[in-house]
Image (cartoon, helix red, strand yellow):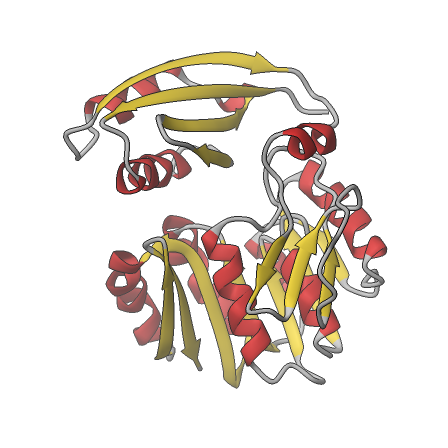
Amino acid sequence: MNDYIEVRFELSPCDEIATDVLAALLCEYDYESFVPDETGLTAYIKKELYKEEVLTQVVSDFPLENKIRYAHEIIEGQDWNSEWEKNYFKPIVVKDKCVIHSSFHKDIPQLQYDIVIDPKMAFGTGHHATTSLIIEQLLEMEMEGKSVIDMGTGTGILAILSHMRGAKNISAIEIDPVAHANAIENLKINGADIVNLILGDASSLSNLSSVDVFIANINRNIITQDIESYVCALNRGGIMLLSGFYEEDIPVIMKVAEPLGLKYVTHKVKDKWSCLKLSK
């Protein structure tokens, strides 16, 4: 199992805007999971990617007036199921149609779509606003018989829901080996192991047929870097769902997307995070 560095940030004053901005900045430096609370933010990064100078720079350049103190410790590889059960991961209900929970949860509401996610690391459980925003879009869209690519699948949650909603040709790509192994388990638990799960990055798209729906819940920089390959993997008339960035980042995305033939359809916002729906 991977060892992680847990960094605890104490913010004064602490508010949702400040913790969201801090998380967005840390995303640019390979931090993978964020747990905000009333006094600050706890963030996680793989031990081998941790750099003290990055934290010093992020704190010194923080664009808001909040004072920030931080400390870090090594978290040895462990069974994250028990940690999330004790501390963080609670069942999630989206639009009264979909419930996301782990196998250890009890008293789950009976809804149309029931997704079981057993996390093996401290992230990827579907609790973040960006994930729930894409889930909302998938619940509203016609998915029966559609072909789908889920770029950066994480635990596989969006590929699983696509399968449940009737998509027939689904590929899911994940660059992290630990997340990829976890996705294999989650796909099997949910009867979605027919999904073509690939360990790789955007270069893997060249080996796939184009699809009707392309999903990428990553971050702004990766999306703008790889969006040309995303477009090549999308059928004409197809839909692209992008998330992992703030509403204010939409013009940055559109500046790159429009010259490639993508048109704005709509977007949703939750806790300042955004999901952008485009058509080709």
